[in-house]
Length: 404
Image 1 (cartoon, helix red, strand yellow):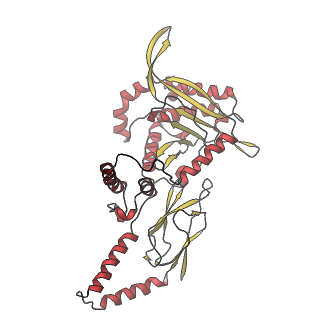
Image 2 (cartoon, helix red, strand yellow):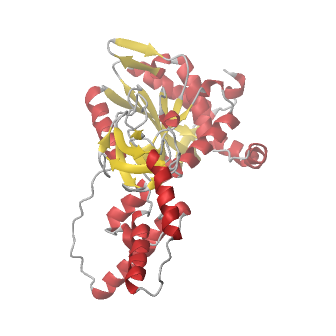
Image 3 (cartoon, helix red, strand yellow):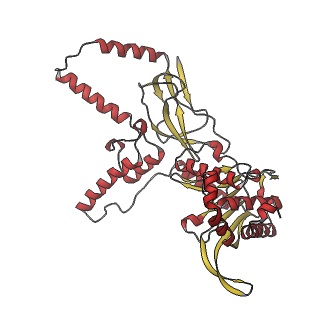
């Protein structure tokens, strides 16, 4: 019986994917649920399992091919599984003269071929292989299920670098051409689209982080003991943004055709840097969650991003986004809106600066804030007041408890 291997339905926010390295070849026997290939989208990496046990008869899409939802990428013969098992059993019953050199040679070649065709790689590892110019057959896999890890690749790369440095200190390859990943291409398209389609402006303010730092210093140990995660800055800004979005609902809206859609819920995206690039997992219904709930969820999403385990649901939707360039030392930036949202809040590094308080010059831990917004639906007055509202809450976080 013929069984098609079909690309599953993508979410509305994902239009296509790219085939990675096949983990199986034509003629290989596979078990139902066994991973056949990984498909890289602009948001997540999907493992495509075998829909049935059988033998692969045809592979219709090769590595780096673009695929859409519903595409048939391979065909299995489920009846061949039983036949192959019977043939295998018969071959085991045939006596073999181990002294026959030709038979031994065939056995050795077979072992080598099996190793080379079953080596598994993830998109992140393939990227490093491409960057280092290393063929995966040169790498000895040490990961689970015979996978090549980044450490395996870097070990080969370090040996190669040592040899190159010993022979020559002059590079003979001043340029390098590397294909853009599916994620990077999609990010590029969205950034250009946001710049071209949005009437985007950015307003700035600065916030005194003294109160937040004091709260963290005083309660961080107890907080971690009770909730199992560290008390970070992001949860304060998420809750401050929630309060500001309540006051200025246009910032939580989006444009669809000729309509303005006001979202009566607050799904806040948190920009996270991963090996595959920038991803924005969503904290759902942030307006009804506590600070500890938000910290736990952000920590879980960040771990999934680092491990390339984010699902399509983790990344779909969102009504407002927060990005923190301060973790990389950014002092100030103009963040680009994440379509179809209408605004994004940018956090930056905390620096001690001289400021005036009560007509006196004092040293305070200060952070610049930036709000990029779509001027088509958000007026400058709303944007400035929205950012001022966040500033007031962060400088006096008791407002989060009193709802004032």
